[in-house]
Length: 289
Image (cartoon, rainbow, N blue to C red; front, side):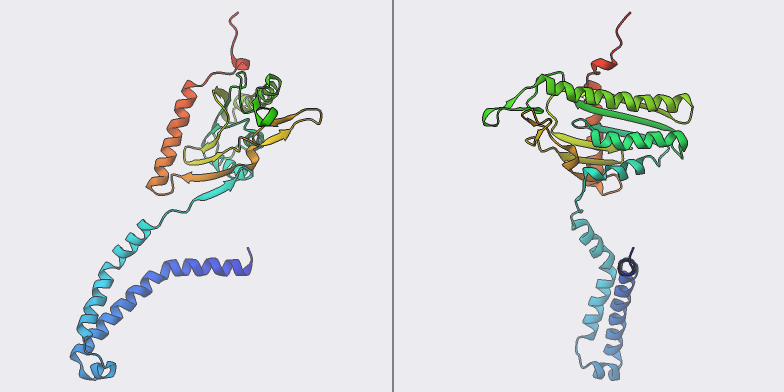
């Protein structure tokens, strides 16, 4: 932090702490001067006014009502809308892993950005678990086994054309992510460092929302640009293929006001409900002997 930035932060803290005190002192001073001017002629002559008592009483009313007016102004002020980029997920993951019980929920496309962060954090627990004793990761991805408009191949006039091969490639990528995270979770549990579980499930439909929930306390929500076009290989056509790392995310926290707490509670319930209805991927299904 630079000297200028440090001075600015200190000034803000000073104002927040002492401005209410100065305001109250000023109001009381006006009150006492007004009362004194009403009854002490030299003071009244010096001020050359005729409404000392009325002004003094008004200042006293202001003093009494100061806190109420301040609270009203605060309640009427709209809470700031915090937005972050998907590439900032690492800081939220690191913060979540400072807890004893780590619970991370995700709904989105392939979850590649989150996967990279989780991989490094889980690997780190093998060497130094810190305060963490349990980790639960649940990831909801689209059912790539079904025909889809997104992801899909870009057809004539921009028409989405279902492409089973492309869907299959995405499915294999997600399968690899889940198997890698699950393997680390099993190692953690075996060495009795941390009990951990990582599981993927499937939801029907296209990847529209990107939702991350950390320890049921913070929710990050954004919308994919579903018409993003990419070329996977030079010999292939364009595909509708949303890019999660370009998605901006709004942040909601239980540490905020009542509205923010309500949003967090709603998203927690929504993902819990979706998880209970979601299908288990075929690669996790146990075939009866």
